[in-house]
Length: 286
Image 1 (cartoon, rainbow, N blue to C red):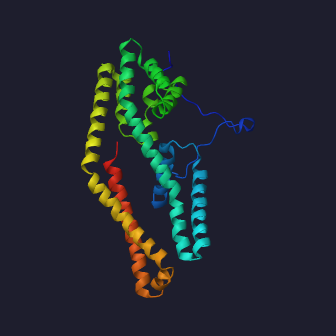
Image 2: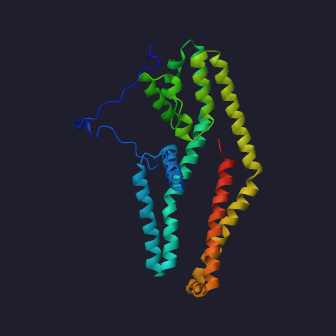
């Protein structure tokens, strides 16, 4: 029997055991401000994407990618402005890769969630208690959802109650639907009730939600593709003029109105990309 909610104590740091545990590296200190918001977003991205690389190493990869892109363009064209633009593009390439990995991971977790809830309901129907059923399902569930469940199971083996062990599943994965699972398990632990019915209803609700998201994405595909094309076309047009006439940027930057129009277009392009990303991320939120 697992001890119910024991008092946890902080172990004293000793030099002879240094290096056994990896430090939890984060950039956000929990303060307020734009910088702290960006740091917190980056920390969440690294955790939710499942990338095991330390955040500091991934940030160094961003710097190396920017140097590689900018340096390659400068060697080919010998133009500082072009090198700076492609260097900025290279800086965000690893971030885009991490965002893509997170999106695929979250979709895989959502696809696994109904089957996992049904499997836990079958374990509970066979007479096992909640803790035992959760540990069995955690050991049988494949990655990526199984990895997160096994973290919670290891916490339970150390004596933490199931409500606290699964309380941060949604934060670790970025899948808000997991809040329903953690709430259902915590409520059942505190008040009891028909856990089998709750888990079966959870599986049905998740399947209905996935079906709704699929229908929504199919109905709005034209609008989403139009928004993406509005972001890509200006970049393609600018690239065409630059490759057709290598002196185009010099002529444009030689006048005040040319510089003003260029930087205005860059600012509007960045703002438009952020707006499109915000709209698309909200429409695809699980």
